[in-house]
Image (cartoon, rainbow, N blue to C red; front, side, top):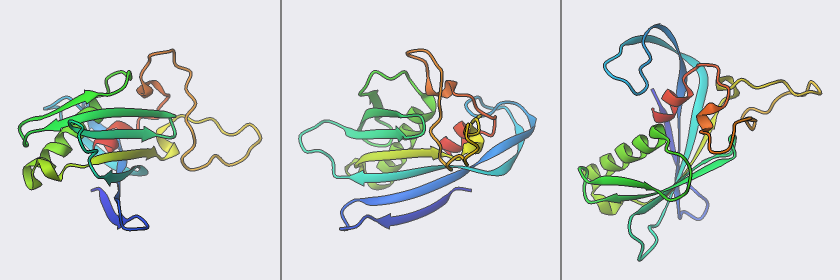
Length: 181
């Protein structure tokens, strides 16, 4: 079950919410992140994905709500413009040249559709989401000098140009599932 803690930033201007969700180990069953109706028996593990969500005022005169998703570990940032005319009319456009990430895009659309449904489209705000995953999600190499690896270490990836961040070496603990939770 996700843990939620809300706080206001110094100055009281922009509320920040921190949420986290555990990774998982699949004991039996099929791959279930995006494909229903596969069933699986899973167990939560101590590794967690954390999201720090900061909302700001909507930029006057601009169509849609801007959402930026930052991953300092992967040294990656994605920008989107989301339009909402109600819960049934939420659409997303990538505002940068990054490849499509269905996990992030589906989560943003569904979350903003829920907010729009519960509070109205006028409740939507420009938002920055910072995502960090515990090192246990990634196949990290120990530091060459034997030093301890920091908790949210940068993930080195030797992937070709235009490849997706999901191509980083993972351990299979469900970072994508934890991200969308």
